[in-house]
Length: 257
Ligand SMILES: [Zn+2]
Ligand SMILES: [Zn+2]
Image (tube, rainbow, N blue to C red; front, side):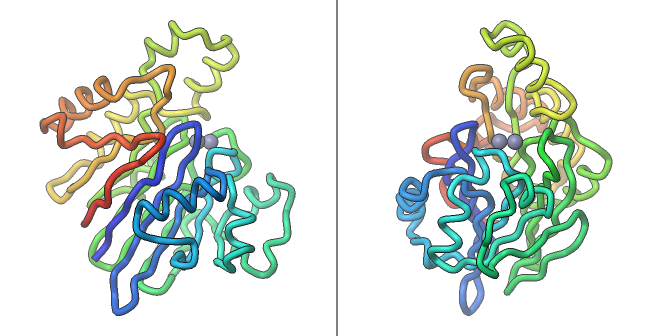
């Protein structure tokens, strides 16, 4: 059985737990874009502590994803995966033997959980997003990308659940007080997904087996949960309550596949 829980999502910090249950549960943390104390607090709210984590995967070097990765993994001796580019972008720190290199398309076989990282277009050195499978269910995570590519869509085929970036409403971004260079960066091909672009992805990957669609990484300034929910519900012909939105402070509840 596979379940997942966002611990928080947005430009203030991203972290997502994935748990494969077996004789001994295996727990993966995807991104740790929070301070160590805050991460401990949110793990506690999920009924866990850092010692319960079996692996960490970092998608890219931006502060809202890398956060306390170095101190967390060194203090609690947790193996960590990231791309070579991400490691070099943070100054190639010493992970004391805990670091493993993740590469586009190379499967990472963990105890009861299989990860498949894939390249995304984003303004980081070597960003990767990923899907996780326990052999029967598949969870996809897709945030921090400017646009969908055929490569991205192929990797998300037949997901049972997807945590999907819905960063901004294009009109709110255009009207916002952001300086124009930032508007160009956020809305550009290597920035973040607009709600409309996210809806196109949802439409492309939806299938009968899709159990959960979680909207994530919403901009606090240039988006609103109700806009995201109504657009995605309309796109997937479901109720707005069927679309969950990960909050910056508390993420989501545990969602089971
Ligand atoms: Zn981010
Ligand atoms: Zn980013």
